[in-house]
Image 1 (cartoon, rainbow, N blue to C red):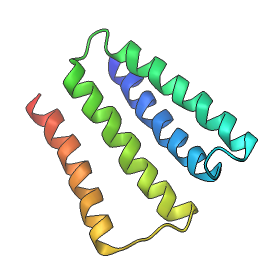
Image 2: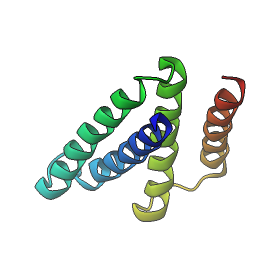
Image 3: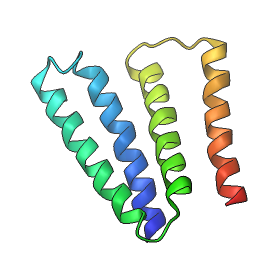
Amino acid sequence: MSWVFLIGAGLAEMMAVFWMGKSKGYQIVKWSILSVGTFALSFYLLSRSLETLPLGLAYSIWVGIGAAGGVVLGMLYLNESRDRWRIFFLLLIIGSVIGLKVVA
């Protein structure tokens, strides 16, 4: 169940970052509320996953899902740059998260 909490926390983090981008620096109330709410959900789910998973592993995966997912959503829906270097480093993040899971 801890892995379900961790994946959920990562997805909530990803959505929170996306809503934060849509809020234009927390100036649009609707998106700001969604961002803060999903950040809170993300922290709650992360804390539940930490009941059995090691901190270093859980935190790394949580950050990786949130960061990589936020970048992908930004590229797809917020017209952020799709530069090849950006995609390369995004793939490095994803590869690092997978590598941490493999060796942990």
